[in-house]
Length: 197
Image (cartoon, rainbow, N blue to C red):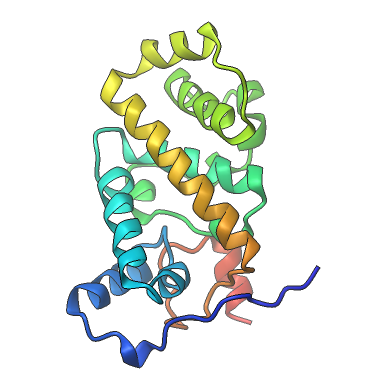
């Protein structure tokens, strides 16, 4: 297996749209996503905006608590083995109280005492979508005990969106600090150390 990146980034000098540049700057400052994945999508501006609009509507904003969506995003990262995505952190989720220690038990969340019933219900949905599990009454009763319909719909959409993008980022061997180098907003502590060497 090669670590070679399979697709080029957009030439930074070709970014003339102020709104696109503002989104790159937000990504560099706040993370999740980081600038590199944006720089790949920006090769086709319609793809860049389709992803960015969906991401900002359902992850950055939306009707479900952001920190729970971040837990689900990080669960998917670990499940699909996307180190690029797994080494990102949402600054907004950290401001809402998500701790780095909350990430370590994600693949064994059901056995962990770290997560609340609400977090576990969301993580069960992420698990079911990621692994193609059966739709069980237990899964849905847990979701409805902890969420209204709107947040469940948003979680399902967002988990599917992030799972597809993470599998794609992994396939093209996306790496950190390759675009807008020197920015480390939203990088996990271990990734900041690794990219500073």
